[in-house]
Image 1 (tube, one colour):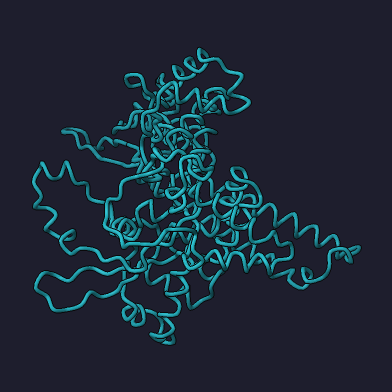
Image 2: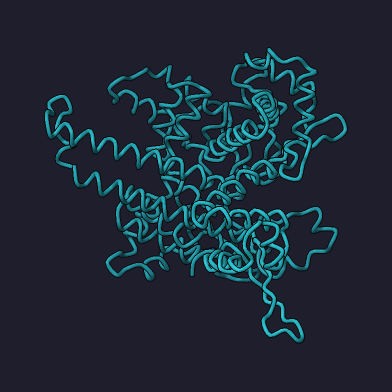
Length: 526
């Protein structure tokens, strides 16, 4: 039985990534965790194939933990029980999929901090976890070393920008009282104060993540005048969990660091929102939104937040004029852009919410517009224009509608409409409901778009497509593996032409998968 948060082809795609990077034994262990959920090492040994003994399973688990694909945890035994807490392991599906988008993460850092910082991040991405000493040692072994001081400087910038974080707790202990029927006994008043995390994985990650003063120590230990202190008043967040005392007197060589995927994905999400607004409104509105995101970014507590914190007109304009494009805008033009962004219509929701003297970015509305466009484009390609009009109409109605009304609204032939709707229903894009009417032989058919189900269906199809592209690229590379060993400058005639053809195919497959991953992030990560 697959987990509720991961689709079938999502699991297959994730296992393929692990196979490509770590081999078949690691992929078998990972598949056990993805399909069965949290397991102990003994349970994995029993469920995996017989040739994988317990020692090998533990070695693989340590490898996957080192590369941030698995998290260990334990649950506190019930009160009065003499049994010890058993260590269990959970596969981090999102982190596994992130391995296919390391180029995107590197590009984000390159745009924000430059190529030197991107190079240091690349080392962390490829090695999983490193100490500062290991980063310096790795640089010394490279073809073009930049020196220990440059590594240290780049590293400090990465921590200050939250692109790099200290590793989480290796084995957080979850309280037994937070699980099971006991949580249902909370009173109505208590439930308003305490909000349960959405899933066991959320609880584990929350328990493992240190408070920000430990997670990003240099931001807090530098004075407000330091270049590393990026507005401490905004960066410091209160610790919600008890953490072990850690000496954070400096970037110790013994402290282990890893890429902060949360911040990297947040940057990509913000970038996508700016592009959506630019396409739907104009470039000036996009610049204003970008300034709002810069102001509120440090106060976002999670990536998939529906709304930003309120930001004032003054803080928006102050951020905006830091850029060349922003300096060309007067405050009146900024106010006009905010009016456009906060306006809604029958085909476009408001992207910004005005409240008192502040403005809030409505991430959910912006992302939903892009998701809707993606759904409609898939329906158009697969079923044609008539199906596209029907699907769009049903999406806007967001309720069950009878067949004839759909035909009238979509301007399609009534005799052809049921067949088109049935095709989409069979593929999981529509809900169908039969309504029996007294005295009528044939029941009325009602149709509706369930956006959550359609999103999940599309996500599964995109995982499948991405898997196929990856397999095709591997196949093409295997076919030409002997040719690829030859020096490019010595190739001539037919061999040179073959190499050029392979390069063209490789670039096409890679760029297609890169674009497809943008759509995957839109539905899974944003």
